[in-house]
Image (cartoon, rainbow, N blue to C red; front, side, top):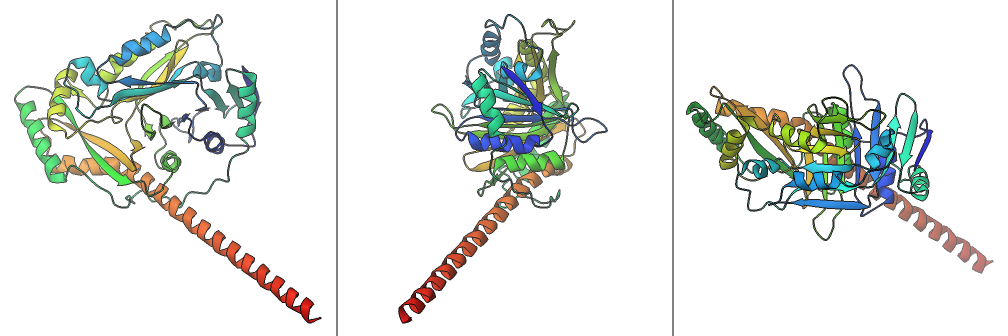
Length: 410
């Protein structure tokens, strides 16, 4: 079921914040884009209250699972409306470490799963050109509820002034610059020996949440680093996996498959799953040749990359749009985490590459700091409000006491 309404009274960010607040403990997502020469792209896609959610476990082929899901019977009349297409699509991510499964490389011992997807969400598509929002859901009740809930969320606090040079409080780098430089030197030796042409080495940065809202990280990123793809996924805690949020921007499209109005793929379009399998191995976070470069980075790095260098977006029988997860910030177990990598060649200088990773991480890290500062501002405002309410209550009590004394005296 779909419903199209004017969208001149609400922004996509405010609408998503309301939907997320109205469905605590439920997974949700938001996708936006920025195009060359403009601040924002035409469409913003929001989704919440998914009816189905799946983990793609380590040790099994995630592409086979996804292909099986796409092979399920589709609607007799394929939808041409974007909101309806996304409503019926899988939405989620695949980790970079999926490549190890594809290439026969030993998985990391701590690897829990390779991806997470949801389906049958209630979806809203904002069209900035037509100034409309189209809601798609599995029932008329879901559509009507969404229309109401978008306009009935909590008051949204403004972000503090953004500083693109600011770093999060208590920032940690589990791999020191010295150790990373040593990894670069080791990769360069293996390249010089002819084992690979290029190797991408990644490293991790982490900072405690300190009560910050991951969606504020996304809000900051969309202003600090607007790009071809902007994404926010909020996976709720379940009996099978802890909660996870992913916020990021990416200029690299891995897969875009479109259908014409008859529902048929355009000439040359591949299956979304097969296109994703090929694109992930050729992504810019892998190296050349992919299998050998991935194996070398696996031996040199300290742990799984997980989100960094993976894939994120939506894919279904009627089309797909999937971005590379570069520039991502994810939060789990009380920490924000960021990864960045350097492309190592025969002439790479270890110290310079270590410094490059710091520069490349600056945007996501400053977005984390903005979210931390937003939380501080929120707490200060709450303290002031509580103090004002207390003072008002004490004044009212004192005035009542005075009135009571005057009444007794009279």
